[in-house]
Length: 459
Image 1 (cartoon, rainbow, N blue to C red):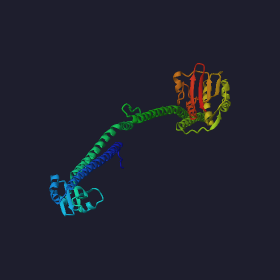
Image 2 (cartoon, rainbow, N blue to C red; image 1 turned 90 degrees about the vertical axis):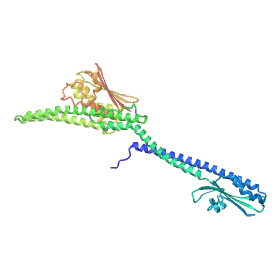
Image 3 (spheres, rainbow, N blue to C red; image 1 turned 30 degrees about the horizontal axis):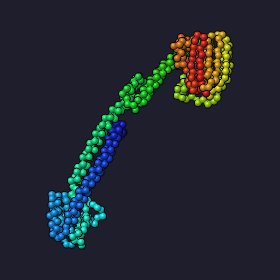
């Protein structure tokens, strides 16, 4: 499998590329600027020498002065090996040459060129810049003077070549240094990511307490570090709930399974009559029913956690649902002499069966814990923000240190209470899940006089 470049290497390469690009642009600017400067100097030097020659030419008034012109030119340009001259006078026929071989293959082009100046290179590799000029000689009105002047610019070309070489070497060195510095900076800057990876490698179901420190993390990494630590906290809480749930399931399922095994072993210990076997089967049926309800409740909670509950889309009249539950629990309430009182009315958007199940859990819980002769009140209060429903009943108060845990799975305020006929311990957890699935909230307050469950549904 082909491995891609690491993020550090990519950043270093990008940094080096950007540095190289900037240096190349700077080198081009320097090269163009220096070349333009040298061209300006060369043209100025060439023009100066041309003017100097024109001045000498203007002083010619006779043939004798024309004959003395070479010595005067020689004196003016003594020691000037960088200058090439070729002077032709048509009438009288006269010619002067200084390093004229430099014009050997460019003379015609120079004379016929439309440009003011022309550059060329000799066979020996010497670079020249030249100019062709035609002058009038006042002493010889019928004569013209053709002037070819060339200037050796090899020293400037050599300097430019050296400059380009040094710039190229400097760019390569600076690019390599920029890449190294970029790698070091990226390596140090990405240290928090490596710590995240290192922490992730150490994580397991038994080691979720690891956290990243945000003290030395750069500003850009703060959000990542906080998100990663938040993820670890959620994972730790989820695994803790999963472990607790697994322990609770094992504990809750152990009792009915143990009862089934015990009753079955006792029934098989000796021969019994058909009636006795029928009683054992009826007893086992009750345990199976309890197991079925417990499994169904756990599946419902699993759907709730994974967002698989139906989407609330219907308008539900809460007073109608409560009245239907009153009819269902009427016999049980009359047996304990418990009046059921409903006040108010209100509507919410929800799933009727789920809402009825939640209200049924709260009402059955109130009936179970209300002493004989007490009254159970259900009040519905429409509000600007939604609908509030309260269920209040007298009875033993819930200890203040246990109020926050009453909606946990399998949690019971009185652990010693018999499990038989007392539900699976999931009723309030299911109620909270249903309320939250409808966007609402549920809370409980308990005092010596009254215990009140409050459900707030959004509008």
